[in-house]
Image (cartoon, rainbow, N blue to C red; front, side, top):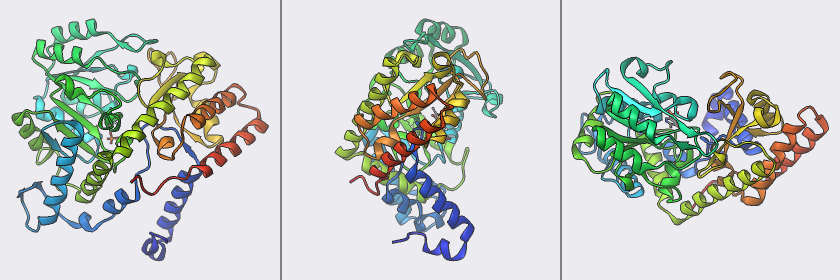
Length: 422
Ligand SMILES: *Cc1c(COP(=O)(O)O)cnc(C)c1O
């Protein structure tokens, strides 16, 4: 059955592009750690008539009529999010991870106030105050770093000193290129000491928290968690903000999202979030998350055995950062290109204390959420890591590349992208 009959009939160009993307996703091996495959049920919700409806406001308090079903959808998304993360309040309206962070900043601070966040070159995200972002013009960002790049341990003494000196309103834990667990208790203790909110941006690992395979910052008293709902959460592209228990904070967050930052919520995507949260509440999702970690550990083992340096010395989550330039003499850009040639997609990445440039850095970043959704296990993860290192060590060998490309393609054929996880 073709689910795109109408597009096919009326818009051949877009139809071709969608078919192309579908084939690309089916035949290539996706190792970008922020990507995943959603279920057909999530895509049905995304494509539903809910996209037609304006629902400014919140369930029971809307500006327009006709909200019986949108109220039901949003309330289900909120209730399921609270159940998954063990919190009291949730705002599921943020359009993506970046606007969720913007809303959170405006909810908890006044312009000119200070955020203490992870140094961007040590794994922090663009939305944590990168100089090129608009938010960097409004708030003041100060930084903490890792103490030891080869263990990944954060310098908590420095974190406390910077906090005491700069009196931030928010201490932000979270990252998009960091592979170790954080000592959440230390973050909370320091935040309490200086009177800051403890906020975690869990965009990358939200699914793993929901699945119970990594620690939940709320268990240590974090006030707020921001996140995406795609990535490991395996839902539609979108954002959310979770509030542990404080009603006043929840009210500030709600106001900052709407009317502070956004107009009408995208109710079709909120329905997709609700469906994905429903999937994440099932035991199968816990198994999925466990396998994501096992697969990352299997890849870690190969890289360490073959003496390719991993930032942080390894991984506690779904992602790995390898210093391919330092260990193999191949730049991040070269590695990205060569791996792409054999059907493996990942991204070049700056490593901590980078000596090269952002456009051609020393590292690559990769992860296991998408391959695990396809059903791959440790055997496949191990072989993929071997393939990666083999081709990087001999990147001009066309015969080798042809053979490995065929092997990657065969692997993908044996593990088709599933339609459903239940
Ligand atoms: C991905 C990510 C974001 C941004 O999410 P978008 O949906 O791309 O806007 C924010 N913070 C962190 C830590 C992320 O990894």
